[in-house]
Length: 80
Image 1 (cartoon, rainbow, N blue to C red):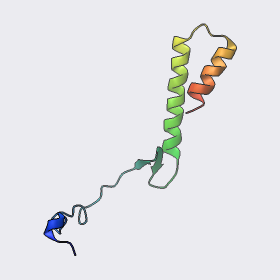
Image 2: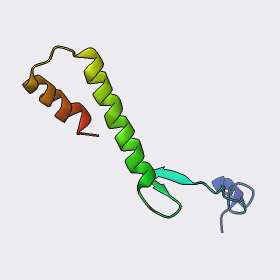
Image 3: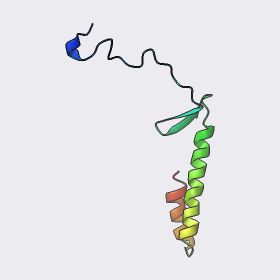
Image 4: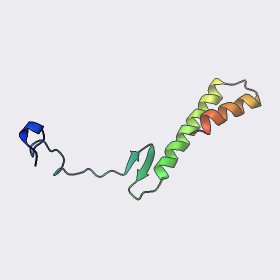
């Protein structure tokens, strides 16, 4: 049992009787999971991020050698 001097009492406990909101998906440690515990949303997010990085490379680096493009691709696109 806690005493009022501890700063923790029955009045200070929050969330024990609160209702939790239902969500379609959640992110934990950088991994997006849905209510069926599949990785569909996570994979979709990663693909979109990779395409965004590829678009940045294509727009900003028009005159690249093949070796420079491969280096940028491996470091910026494939890492996502």
